[in-house]
Length: 123
Image (cartoon, rainbow, N blue to C red):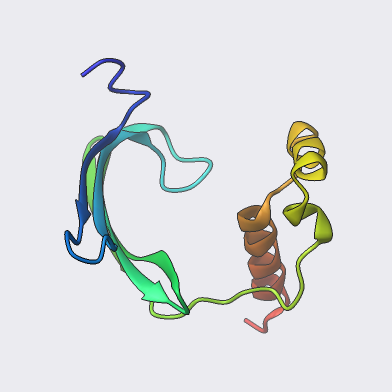
């Protein structure tokens, strides 16, 4: 395979009758959180339809941080969405301006909101 680090999708399972996405397998170098060292990883994600959108609901991921090897098996049964979204997310030109400025996209906004909610929650 040409440029295997750049093109890390190895397998894609699609229902032949409905064309629904079922799972995807990736091999690459990743980190489970921003401060972790980059490691060779093998990841399989599973998709499920949620309100008409196919989203990842489970991920199985290997990660090595010698001398320890990890196997993450994470399942998400709940999905939270912000009550409102900024208009620039839906305008390609304005979105590109925000992207060029290094600002967070929808996922970044969602993660930011989740972090704020988590830090505001009583411990």
